[in-house]
Amino acid sequence: MAGTLKCVYIMILIYSLCFLVAGGIKFNGECRNINDCYRKYTLVPYGYMRCIRGYCKLQRDVKFL
Picture 1 (tube, rainbow, N blue to C red):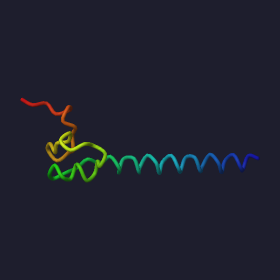
Picture 2 (cartoon, rainbow, N blue to C red):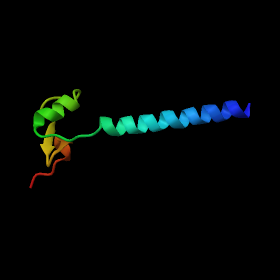
Picture 3 (cartoon, one colour):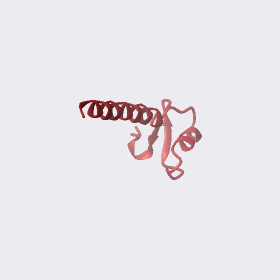
Picture 4 (tube, one colour):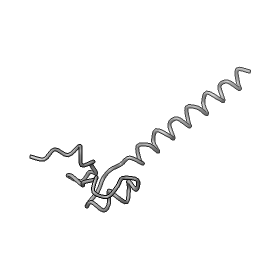
């Protein structure tokens, strides 16, 4: 019984670490131009993303001076 619980606990830890790493890779927003942003974030409508200083940003998050 204790061995089974240890095995389940270890599996949960490994899966959670894999999801954490995969999530970090998925949301890497580096870009060179605006088209890179739309290739990475396919569900965002055209005109809502900007490539600012090498990172994809939503237009509402960009502060214009």
